[in-house]
Image 1 (cartoon, rainbow, N blue to C red):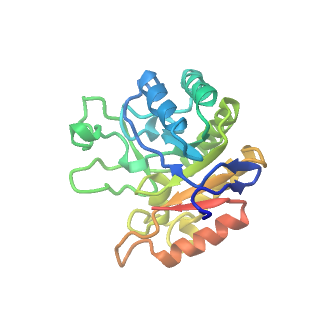
Image 2 (image 1 turned 45 degrees about the vertical axis):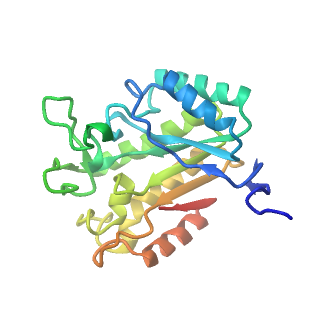
Length: 265
């Protein structure tokens, strides 16, 4: 009896041996964004356990885009070198294809790891300034982020492109852009977090503008034969927030721009 789960699937030129995908799982175990032996063990074990695809945890495209001090980054040579070591190990001993999730935490950055409460880091304890579409705190008691200028938008877009080029040099098979869970790109999508008065806020067309610009920039920097996907939160579960209908509009716009899959959270 045949099984769809264990059948091959092809995305552009990438063929997966089966349809089991290990989702990105934050480990909060990097030092200055650099992968270590923990990541070698963690990802190495997953890559030889049989899934068609393993996706590396949410990886910051710039330092202020980390969720915590322990998050992996891909914006300098040392980080790139550490990931190349881990991915080459996975290639040598494992069978899975390897992807990476590129991310920016936005206003949900500068927090402690889950086992320390997952709350905002206090000033003087290593906290850093966060950015967001609007100067609105994620929740009561959280830091107020800096509203991004048009220049900030270009800086972040370039950071995504630079990390994409590093991912290609490392040899990743696939990229997923993280636009879910209230992080930076997700915050642009949601009218609860995005209350800008310029071309990047207000209407649905305006709110999806920057997330689509980031996608297009990454698609242009990523090899045509390699798949590129997008992770979204399909709904804010709030009458005044992002809706399933909005997600359908976004998915259609992404498809027109060369998106190969939408990962709904």
